[in-house]
Length: 175
Image (cartoon, rainbow, N blue to C red; front, top):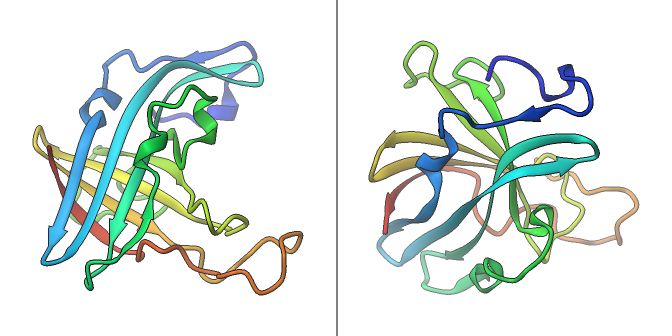
């Protein structure tokens, strides 16, 4: 958990020996009035990153805004056979409480998990991600990191420059 993924020689396997990632597996839901955010997460053992292996999380999500409008729904893709990196949530980088986005509520030595977070209709956004924090068996905190308005130059002009899920921290309950 304390080392960088790239610090390991090929072929290395960063195995989740303590099953830390298992705490995040399942269906999670945030609701505030009409606003709803649902995430389904699964775990892939020994995912191949070009000769380096790691256990990862992958998943899909749905976001309904405060007006009750479904802005994005990729939940139907969770069971489609495909490379796990093609899912809209993928990866598992362990981050301590004082890195990336500092966690003031975390206990000393507490780790969180960072994954890529994609919006399927907003390809090319730079810097998007999600940080998962385990609270207890029925609750996680999910921090959505937006793009700060940056889009890859190689992408088409006039693309939206923000995720449809607002950048915020969501307290989610296991379903």
